[in-house]
Amino acid sequence: KAGVTQTPRYLIKTRGQQVTLSCSPISGHRSVSWYQQTPGQGLQFLFEYFSETQRNKGNFPGRFSGRQFSNSRSEMNVSTLELGDSALYLCASGYAGPTETQYFGPGTRLLVL
Amino acid sequence: AQSVTQLGSHVSVSEGALVLLRCNYSSSVPPYLFWYVQYPNQGLQLLLKYTTGATLVKGINGFEAEFKKSETSFHLTKPSAHMSDAAEYFCAVSDSGTGGFKTIFGAGTRLFVKA
Image (cartoon, rainbow over all chains, first blue to last red; front, side, top):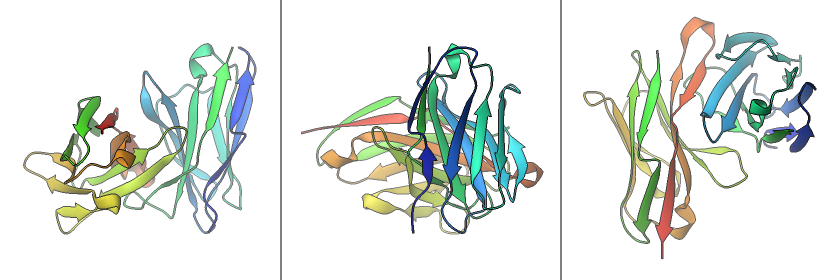
């Protein structure tokens, strides 16, 4: 089975721009979660989608949004980028719930200048 | 609210020595607990998880962890460290509230293995 894939792997943007990151989960997985990883804040939960519905979200401003398509692929969007948005964005997929193993992609490293 | 505390941001051991990485959690019952490992420039990989049942959980690469409810701990151990164990380790608790779930991670512990 192919693993979780994320595109692009690296991205450089400037302040004020917007960015869209993509995540393709493992075949059969319907849950996709997004995390932001930074040296200062560690791994922080952004949101979780299941069957195209956002079921849970973390404490991030409205500039961070996401969606999931019928094939379970997910995108996250960050509008009006700030320097502090520079981070590794990780996507994880799983079957359904909190006891399930999450399988992580390699991440997208975003640098905001 | 769920929370995870990992004691020690850095741990250094000699090759062949015992590895002990500490994790304490705060959670509603039942807690779903995980240990993940992250190698440089890679995503996270599951080492082991506790959901229900036996409190001593065995994972990959010789790691194991024991769930101790009375101590709210889920420490990770390995009897003999190998150079390839050098990585960052994250303890996590999963919350099943409001129909969905989210995973709360600890700050991570970087393990150094000396030859």
